[in-house]
Length: 190
Image (tube, rainbow, N blue to C red; front, side):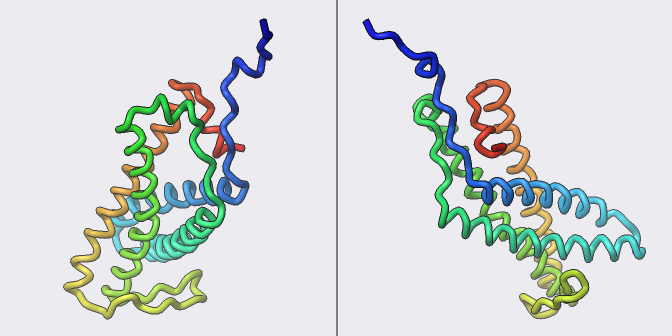
């Protein structure tokens, strides 16, 4: 009769993401939360220096998020994420697998769609983006009041959609941490 080792009784610790992937994940998470709340706050302000400052900050943050998202996608293409633990994949109902994959793909798409719509809206309304007050960016579209009126609600809808997916992503991570207790969240906390 063979004796089993204590480590054989415990599930294997999930593999972690690379340090760069972890850094990009958390810096983007903080930036997205900050820009979302700043954006929802600034639209309710009356015309003032504070509102102008927040709009400029919002645009700069959007361009920064766009840049970080491009770096994150490039990193992900060149550094595959660790696979989900096999036991977790086997225990996961099909709908959870689809939700896991779909949420990630939709968030990645919206990381680009939201800032690009904002950039296009700013161009259409006739306000060039000058990042940090130093780097002028080309307009994505020509100035057009009609186009601006179309792009503004699309930017808002995309931003709220991204916010909803982020909340869903966080809820799933918390479920894994506190309900399933499978250590999955540790892959991004290493």
